[in-house]
Length: 119
Length: 115
Image 1 (cartoon, rainbow over the protein chains, first blue to last red):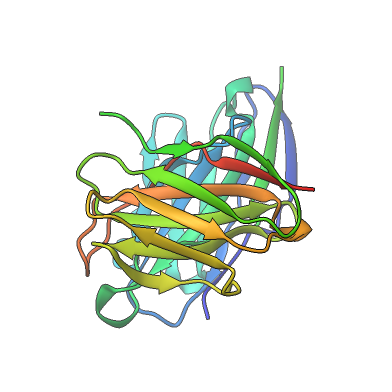
Image 2: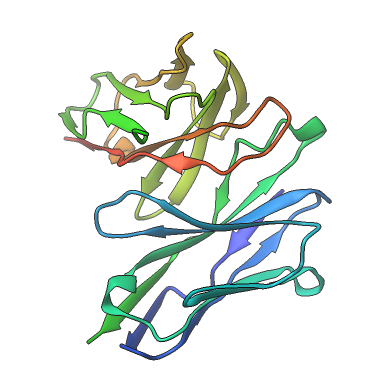
């Protein structure tokens, strides 16, 4: 069965520090997608990025960057020069293809990492 | 384009009652998924509907049910409420086809409190 583990429960940093959120996943499917979502205090989950299992190219988008390594089943997320507005709960999630792609609608989430950025 | 809307935003019920939550997806999206979020269990998948058919189901008791209408709007129902059903219920919509992938867009959630 699929599983997502975010070992860091809470992280506290001071503004302008870099911070990396760790995510390790388990799946038997060869086709899957990985995501990061952000949940601010308002509660709504905000989509940040997705990666499919065939694309290990890492990406930088502004202050955000992602490191996807299939060999270690990890999909880590880094915020460079953190800001107070980055304070939120961050979730890593997995979506497997399942039989014929029918399981894509199910996301398996990690437990989340609470990030607090202090001014 | 309007986002995913959920009604009501807050709800208080007592044990034994039943409740119906509503979700309107983004226009054009045909897939709707429901999730339960609690402090203890985190975010858990309830079910997914696509073109009025339940495509996937999570590990929840039969008290949790849902449906999708022809306009893609979805409702979920919880019967015989228990204290443990207190949670934030999130709905997500996706433009995906039946066998393809697209990211899910989440609504603001319905906060259910069971007393």
